[in-house]
Length: 271
Image 1 (cartoon, rainbow, N blue to C red):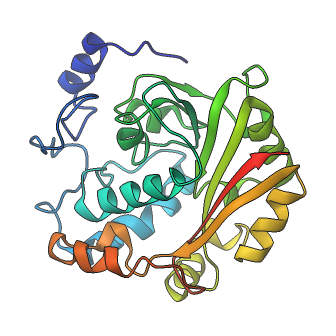
Image 2: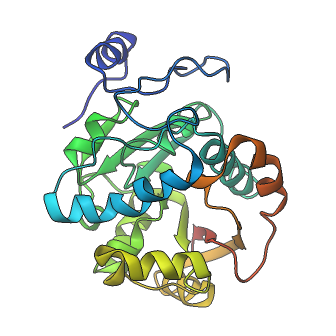
């Protein structure tokens, strides 16, 4: 499935209730009213009740093969701040402009796609049609990372966030990401040394069977697939989904490089 990026299609999605957040590409950062039929915003749920939503998402999808009815919005302040931080870190090594063709693997309902669409020409793939239907970006396709239906060197950057730990054939996935990239491959994965990630991995059946990544282990996987690591960072203390608006500035200050952080980030290039 591939959709055309156009205002008419975006308006249709809004009318059908697929979108939960308003500003489209090229608009200002002001937050327009959120469609409550879609998912939680800071006014919908207090932070503690968001824990149920976040921890239950993987389990619900694993049992029913369907996405939960309510999903966190990319405009949740903690999520937006975390995404923008990661983009700024990647930009230190990777030139990203409006013309940059970037493929997001495992884009889901658009937590990253929404923000990436404002800074580059983003394309998204995921194995779930239902999640893609709730993604605000039209340029998406149903596709498996292990068999990407793109020509070699199609994209300037290939990016995967919290996706690889669910892929059985890691090397096949990374090799495919490398193949369709002209130069850069960026991956971010949960840090198994972080206590919160460890608790979530025990609490949800789908996460129990997932891969476990230390920074050293993730670097080795990337390097053995003919990629040169340019930058690594393990950072973050507060879960973006659970961070209330008033705590976002503090959470941003705590996102320094440290071994027990929430997430590993690796920026690499083709050898």
